[in-house]
Image (cartoon, rainbow, N blue to C red; front, side):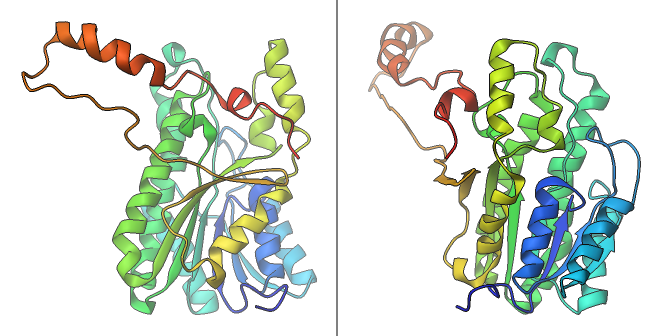
Length: 306
């Protein structure tokens, strides 16, 4: 495969492409030959407001470099609007080959203080948005017997994190959605994978830094460039990844990890059946050493990024 054109003639939708990780993904995919729908409503990190200028700047940058791009300002969190995002690709470029579900917001709050609105706002963008845009593209993928989905998950969902019940639930849901899509669309030669990105962006910049541990974690994240995520997205979108589906990768600076997915860790059985008492007496002592500890990404990924 020729260097620099792994996505030649493919049409890609990148949501949340006006800034940060999404911007770098859109720019690299265009540099790799893709025609790109740059989707961004131009909202704040919390999902408030609308501004077309960030997305338009990315479109202009792609065109200035000789690429092809078009702006979409529709919201992923609305079913009709999500369909318009895919229609934008089909109407402008004649087809759709790749969906990158990157759009996101944060409404961090400790679980016991989280409002219903904060819960719904995050779920709507991350989980509902990923489903809506993916579902809108599915008929196109089925008809042409090809396509690739790349979804953004997070260690906040895969591992857990403080004060992010809404975001964590949405991001773990995205991982399950991706795997379900991989099962259902495999017969049509359509792939679906997740990336858990580590990078300094507007969203990460809103993390609390009230304790020395939080401050140290943020300082470590500041060293990680958003552009480091884009190559993995471009690879997963390309034909070179035709055998890769249903997987979760973490990208952290120059490091790439294949993340494990739930499998049985220990098992016990008894011919007599279990009672609450025998579970307490026999199962707990046997399984407790294999319990997954409450550790977030700063503990699991304890070394400095490369």
